[in-house]
Length: 173
Image 1 (cartoon, one colour):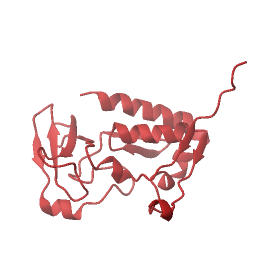
Image 2 (cartoon, one colour):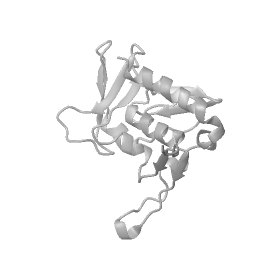
Image 3 (tube, rainbow, N blue to C red):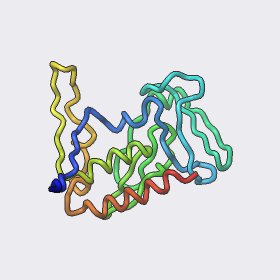
Image 4 (cartoon, rainbow, N blue to C red):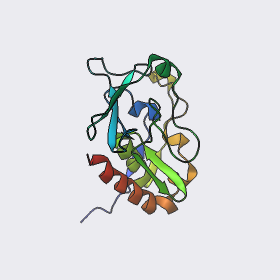
């Protein structure tokens, strides 16, 4: 006797969007010089990046490279507002962004996009509940802040289609 299909389950972890740009992660952007896919990475030789460490922009298409200034590293902020979403380090347009239901669906990198996909495709979504006894301190995770149109089950197939299309473009060099 075969088991009935069980709905995909998503268990929210203690993750914010910043967790996808810190450490060894790269941010995929449009090169400010040639508009090809470029990467914002930790500066070579530096330890894994923390929030206020400086980054380097590298484009493999035209060879453009730039280091973030120390002043910019002190005053950076994440994407906000409507329309084109930009990276928080150089202000370049994110590579992984597309129109979806009249809104902008975006991700910093392929790992961020995969996390979003896992959330959207889930039929069962378990919320993160902070537990001070276990060292949990965040009140709002990234998924708690996602817009209603992205969370809605009626938009699931279209949102997943856009995520898949972005994933294909993110692997291209």
